Length: 128
Image (cartoon, rainbow, N blue to C red):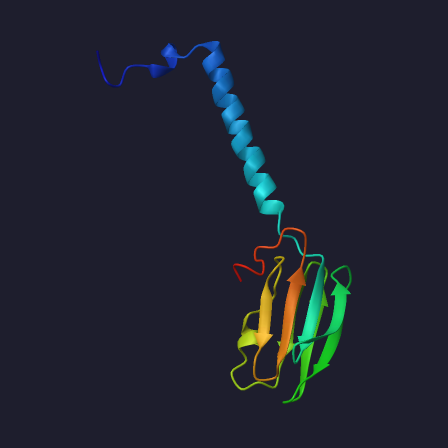
C-alpha cells in the first residue's frame, strides 16, 4: 500500500459531516473570543481617587490635575489615550491608544491613571 494513497476515498459522508462541524465550531469560537474585551467606559484616577468616569461613545478630552501639572486624556469612540503628561519619561503617553477592556495607562510621576472598563476584561484584581 502506498503512503500517498488517496485518503479522501476512505472518508464516508458522516466523516465529512464531522469535519465540517469541527471547522464551523473553530470559526465560531475564534469570532466569539476575539470580539470579547471591547471597552465601554473609562475610569480616571488621580492620587488613587476616582476623578472621572466616562463612556466611550463620543469624542472628548479630560484634563486631570496632578502634583506635576495637568494630564490630558483624549477619548474617541471605542478607545482612549493619555495625550500629554508633564512626567519626565512619558511612558503613559507612549502607550498610545488603549482599546481593550482592562487596559491601563499609569502616569506614575503625576499620580494619574487611566483604566478601560468593559464586560470582557483581560485582567482582574487577581492576575493584574
